[in-house]
Amino acid sequence: MVKFEDVLFWAFVIIAIALFLLFLFGKSPTLEQSLLALMIGFVIKLHGDIKELKGRFDMYSNKKNKRK
Image (cartoon, rainbow, N blue to C red):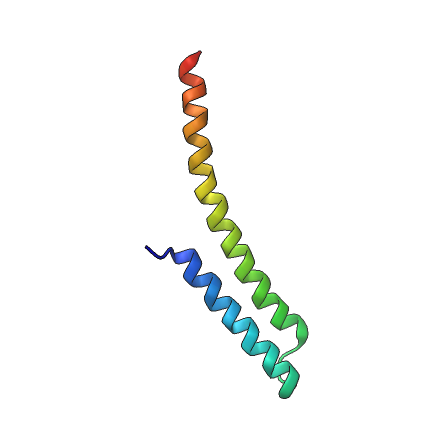
């Protein structure tokens, strides 16, 4: 199953590549705008990974609390 965060990540990566190519050939966007689109994609990807890991750590913390 494809997660929403993964779709957004790849969409922003494609947008960043397109903006970078426009920067190289057309001088339309600035380099910072291209990097910003790439960084937004990575932030979305990290958010999805952290959200997934939080669920795993909650499972371990519940076991630890039940032992006391």
